[in-house]
Image (cartoon, rainbow, N blue to C red):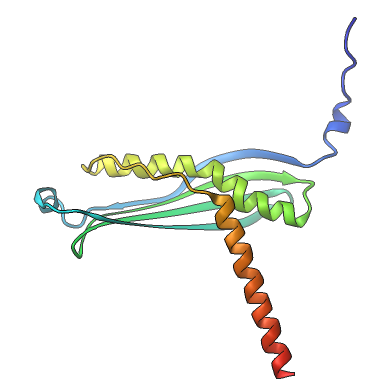
Length: 165
């Protein structure tokens, strides 16, 4: 006896998510002190900056861009600087605004980050430096902090307006 087949149309009525394309949008590697820097000794200082940009491309199509900048310094000298802008096109449909915002702020960066991490590692190694692996990032915590900051700014803006009325 065969099982009944679910109606495909009924399945598509809920929210949809699809990874359409993942690509490197921009990349830069600089080793301004090479080759002398390879002979210097000391404990390097690493600093990482992370940013994100979301752009609506079409009705249910969004570009999410994850920017990673990693600088390595020894004393005040820059040993190397890596900048990677990893991007992806994501199809998202049927989500309420709050869930859509969370998908774009948490789920999409979680998909992009391993690609950015690999590109950063490859660039550093190709530059003649020891391999470096970026540690995992909790995008959910970053998103929650961003929501808290936005709420605080709205509260502050509301307080200022009330005080000036």
